[in-house]
Length: 458
Ligand code: GLN
Image 1 (cartoon, rainbow, N blue to C red):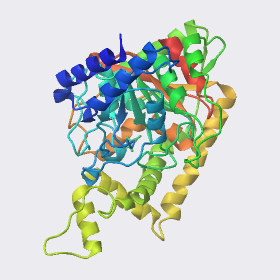
Image 2 (image 1 turned 180 degrees about the horizontal axis):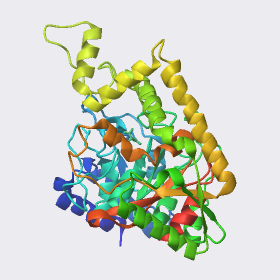
Image 3 (image 1 turned 180 degrees about the vertical axis):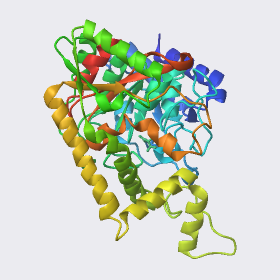
Image 4 (image 1 turned 90 degrees about the vertical axis):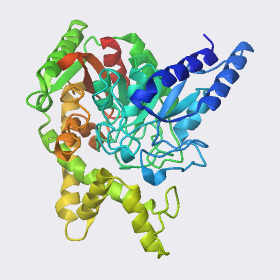
C-alpha cells in the first residue's frame, strides 16, 4: 500500500472510533497526508528511505510539536502552540513518518489511568468502561485500537509500560539518556524518558533506533552508539540467557491470573533455552515511597514556569490585579487536583527543615535501589516481573484514592529510579479476558537484551 492509503486508513479508523475512545486530543490530518504523499512520490522516484518512512505515528501530548497544539493534558496549556519540535519529533519528521496527531494523557503525566486529563479520560478499547492505563493511555489505546500503528510515550514511573500491559501493547522505556528529552515537557527531569509504543517488539526496536542517539541539546543525553535493537528482536534467541524473577514483585498484591500468565511466559522462555532463577531486590519495597517524594519535588520546580505569563492560559481576576494575583488565579484555575497535590507534596518535601528528612532520605533509597540492580545484574542478564499488579480497572474505581492509584506502578518505578531500561510485552489474557503484561529489565545501556527476550516471546 502507499503511505497515503495507510495514513488515510488510520485517519478513517480514528474518525470511526475515537469519538468513543478519546485517545486523541488533536488531529493533524492535512499535514500527515501531505507527508504521506511526499513520501510516496520520493519512493516512486527511487529515493532510499528509512524503513519506517510513510508509516504514520501518534505522539503523546507532552512532547512539543511545532505548529501543533501541545497541552500535556492540562488546561493551563490550552491553546499553546509550540514554536519548535522536540528532538525526537525532528527525527520522526526527517525519516518521513506522518504524524497523525497528539494523544491524551494524565495531566502533566501524573496518573496511572489517563483520568486526570483535563480533556476527559481515554477508554480502553478492550472494554470501554475500563481505563487504558496512564499516564500515556492515549498512545497505548490508539495503538491497541488500530488508530495508529506506532506511537510515542513517556515513562517517568511506568507511563509507557503500565498502559502497555493493560492494553495488550508493547512499550519500551529506554535507558535514561538514550532518547533526548529536549522538547519533552518535563515532569521529573531525572526520571523522564520517551520511548516506543507499538503492537510488536520488532516495531519498538525500529522506532527506538530511530529516536535514540546523542543530542547536544539535552545535557543528560548519552554519547553511546544506538542499537542493534532490530537485529536483537529479529534474532529471537535467548539460549543461555539468565532471567531473574524479582521475588519482591510477584507475590501478594498481584492478581492470580496476572501471575499465572507471568509464569507461563517464563516457561516459554525456559523452553527457548533461557535459565530462570530467583533474585531478591530487598530495597524495591521502598521505591514507591521514594518516587513519590522525588517525582513531586522535581515536578514542583518544573511546573513553576506555568505562571500565566509565558504559555497558554492567563486568568486575570476582575477589576485588574497584580502579577502575583494573576499567577495565583491562573495556577488555581489551570491545574487539576492531582497536579496541585503533587506541587504541594514536592514543595513541602523541599522546604527548609524537611529537606533532609524527606528529599534527602528518598535520594538515599534511590541509591539503594540502584545497588539492588547492580547486585542482581551480577547474577542475571535480565530481570522479570509482571508489569502491573492487575488488569485494567474500571473508570472511576481508583480516582478518589491516590494511594491505590500509585500502587499501579509498584513494579515499574524501580527502573526509573535507577535509569535502567525496561520493556512490557503482552503475556496473555487474564482476569475478565483482559490483557496482562510481563516486564523485563536490563542494565543501563543494555537495552538490546530487552529486544532479545521480548522478541522471543512474540
Ligand atoms: N503513574 C506514575 C505517576 O503518576 C507514573 C507517571 C509517568 O510515568 N509519567 O507518577
